[in-house]
Length: 226
Image 1: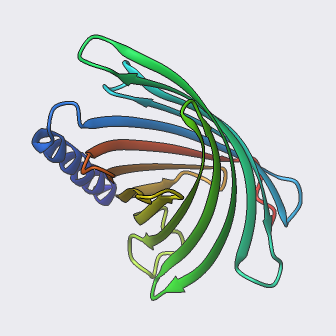
Image 2: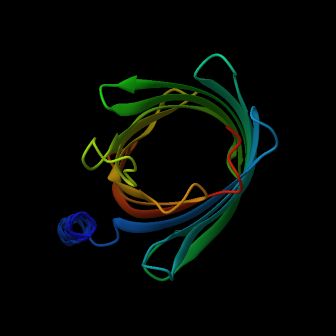
């Protein structure tokens, strides 16, 4: 119990300290739900919902809805995935006026899993086909993620884990750099069906625009097939 309180306090202090030093308007918020259903041990269908805001809970920025289908190889730590997403975006033109836009997106992904000392590591390679108001473009994404167990290795169950991830995104155009995202936080496994993650994400976009997000992600597994 003391460990749980300490980790939550540390994460909360980190978020408050970073938010206090960030420029006004640069701190955003991100709530996400992912629900997965295992069709069989190889095939998994997942629905994703995201709600991003400029201020906690209110002042919407993005509504994201999507679905994806994943195939896991039996004899290799590799997964293939294909999905679709629709984004409804609300952006500020100035302090009082906002602009609304829609995006339709298809994406394909390859994930490779492994171990790095005591941590699990995942490399993800993704390509997106994006239809935006200003036209179509293709974007490539690469991320590397670490999941580090927290607690004594002698314990049979360690529900807490640390999260560290870096993602680079590039677009097929004259100036390809789109953004770089750095994530850090903790997760807690309530049961084999529910996991909650709290993270801080910093995003450096093209043109030097630097933004930050508080993130809370609820993962709901409707029955993992081992």
